[in-house]
Length: 115
Image (cartoon, rainbow, N blue to C red; front, top):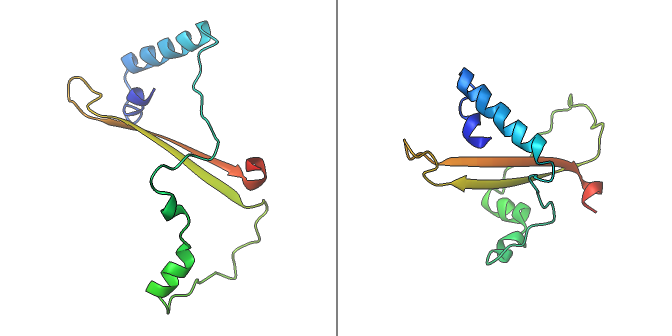
């Protein structure tokens, strides 16, 4: 699917047939799926960075900075949301051009669903 997404700006008939073949495969083999683990990721070797208080760090770097909030901004209609991003890449994926591809999956969920 990621390989086909690069043709979304100017798709050709062959791209549609390949996409239908992928969906046909998924329809035929219903037990196949993409599994995304939404648990909090395990950080190896970089835990100290997660414990930093970036607000204090930025205040020390930029002591005169203030957050300007527009008074015309409406009140939020939903609770605060969490953004989780997963990234994967395949170096030299394209066998002809040797170009790499990168896949992104971005989840936006409410904080209550995380608990």
